[in-house]
Length: 219
Image (cartoon, rainbow, N blue to C red; front, top):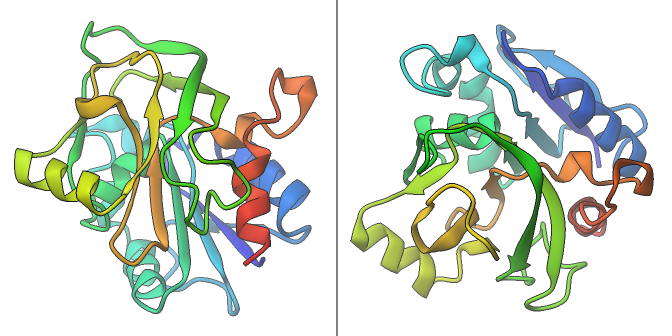
């Protein structure tokens, strides 16, 4: 699966994302700088990595969401292309309007960096087909603003439509309904706060993130 890893000023998980993409999806996966006007020809997955784009000024992801490359990412999504946003990438997707809701400061106002357990709530997506229904996986988090919020109508719609893809077993940040990851209506854009790219080799402590990339590769 031809993959483009989008780099913003302040991205600090871009190398991790590129390594995971090359290991699991595309040996020739490449970086794309945020000022580019388009994605490389044939891109199937646009991967927005974690980090602190633009130093989290204004709000996390707010400035990155208005970068030139995001117009191409939106067009890619509208054509049915896959988009994965992890941590800051999830924040960018909500700021860009590709996913509903917002991520605010963690409930206790502390930065959390630790492995957490997630339940796969929907294993029938392009990103989760390799997992079992209700499978519990271990994936690390590293964020200070992962507290997912949306208005009650949006939360109800996400739940009713099976768009809550991952849910925390022990909610570390106060996210509504323990939400750790959601998908868009068409099922081709996923945002999540935990880092699957940091769990693709046992050397890293868990290989539970592999299921996501294996799911995408099977598409």
